[in-house]
Length: 111
Image 1: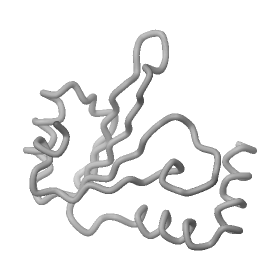
Image 2: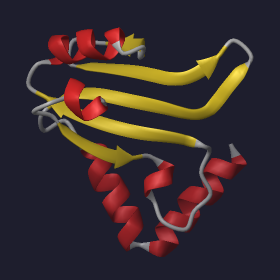
Image 3: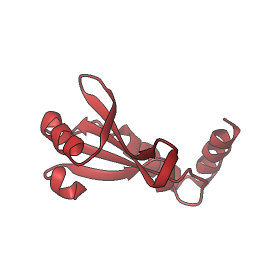
Image 4: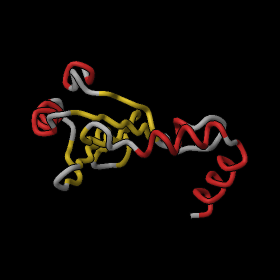
């Protein structure tokens, strides 16, 4: 369904779960790059995604939170214009540099 809503968008898996062999919370982070944020927003909200923050060029949506906590599956979707995708480079770097990934993991666990 997400692919239909975000047709014409580039969808990437980002966040800690996208980095191999490190600890991560049970939350899936998704980056969606699109040319038309407002149309994507309307489709996401119609499908039950909740807009948690927005600026002129970025929006963040969540799905899977309940009044009593997390559902079985929790998703964060970061909606951006095409090319606003630094998170992809960060994930790629950590996947290629195991020691840096371990340091990132330890930092996350400490906080």
